[in-house]
Image (cartoon, rainbow, N blue to C red):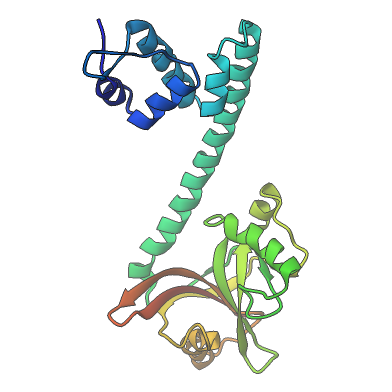
Amino acid sequence: MKYSISDIARILGITTSAVRYFEKENLISVEKDESGFRLYHVVDIFRLLSYKKYRTMGFSMKMVVKQFGGGENDRKIIQSRVAKQKQEALKKAEYYKNLADYIGEHLESIERIDKLLDKYEFTMSPAMTFMHGSECGWLSKVPEEQQIVHKWVDAMPATRLSVILNMKAESKGYFAYSAPPEVVCHLSLPTKLHVEELPSTSCLHTITAADDRFSEEPHLVFEGPLEYARKRGFEINGKPWGHILLVEVAQGARLKPYVELWIPIC
């Protein structure tokens, strides 16, 4: 039985261009009928199904072509490659398992908005490591710093976009990346820039909605919670900080960030 190039493309879920590439690399042969249409035999289907199997395991197209090109006649080579791909698959499985966990934690934070928006509870804050550049915190114009910042950006959502209030500098707010210390260690995140370690401590915990001023005046997000704490006689006992949970975008591209805040008190 013979098959057209469209038959092969549909069955294997590849493009006709890919089929022609395999012809060019002599992975499969082709004959043409009187009208010039390409025809393929079962042996070609067999080769292409094998190609599909190894591609699904993560082998590159170039590697599969090499394997079926006739220059390698040693099953031990194939066995070694498959064993290597297994290890790569296990690494990916661990990565996606961790990713699912981080996404789950982020989702739990978002779900707290309904409970804590403009409301307060007393709780212990999580211990947190913050890293920021020398300009606005999230960004830097220094190439060496950019390389370090990139590592933290690339690790999101394990790392979070955060904001800190410096009570000793005219209540100036600044941005930073953050992650629990154990995550920083597990991911080997670089800590060569400005790094702060804030321990777990007794806090007022709340979520508030910021506005378009947030990116230029991040300190404003702390004003309401600080006023709430002072009116109730609490003393601020450390640096207030928070995570950006999500950002709603209204018409006119107006931003509405939701920020989860921890206000250390005693």
